[in-house]
Image 1: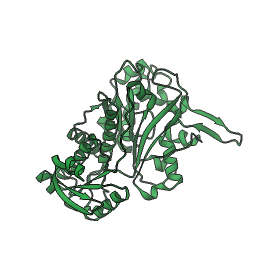
Image 2: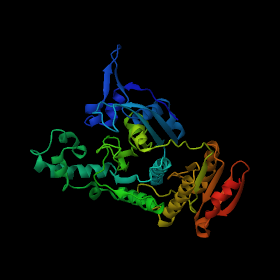
Image 3: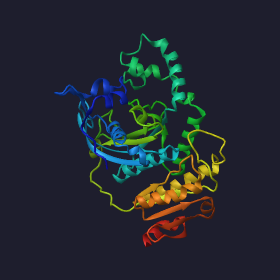
Image 4: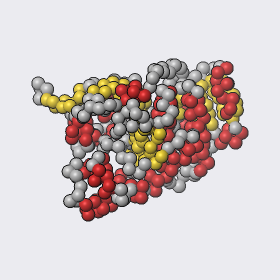
Length: 401
């Protein structure tokens, strides 16, 4: 768990959330203290946690995973499910660039909501693409909107895709969609995510208009929604998140720290949940995919590496499905994402060492041979013993240990 100050320097939020966003433009509680410093009561968790990651140099020991909970503050119109002071729970993951990390982050959110009994929550998904994709889309969108400048609302000049104006929304109905301007790398990444979600039986709907309201997002964005009379008409989103690989660099940290996370408002969830369900604390199970050949695994950017093949992608999907099945049964799972720059042979000892460091009780090793035979290799990290067992018997075998 990580805890950050309620009061931060205003620039922490103003330069990360977007100067033209509703949060910065209308909703921040900001003031000048007696020393002349401009301070802001935190409106969300990601920017403050990223600031802490940089100031404490936690990026020197990646990956880092955090969860947090605490009060947030936004000056907006109070209504059912939306308060000016509200409790937020969320997770942040730093150091995993592989698209499988996006899938795992979504899957953890799905399991979290199901653990609260919110089985009807529906997942909406989109990709904002990489920088090149967004720039190409921006040009096309500006060209389209130039015909409607006299009809657009004042707010739309800065945040057209976030506009709530009925007239703006009507104009946008026939506007270009970002998916038509995605780079090949972004298309391939998003295709992997959707295929793997299907493989894991996590239903989703692609919403090409889903953009999220904060400027630091890129590539994957998602929302879980619930339709209920207990929530206000516009308050159906109960959990939302996405990827923000450029945020650490934007805040003055090192280059190339991939990041992803999500958050949920607890007051909104409490309206839907009758009984609190507290998960049991237990040692995690490490899931480790083991490709047969060296080199990088599937990455966001296509290359000529032989590991960017359907068989290796199937290995990732299968391994994540095994992990998801264990999570669904209430076990703690840590999926050991592979780094794209190292060979599988060199990574396995490091992955096992990291699994031991996080106090995992077992490691589940999955390679092509295991998939073909319908088994996994189960390694007891306390006794340094290992055995093979059928995938269907994995839960029973773990219980016997």
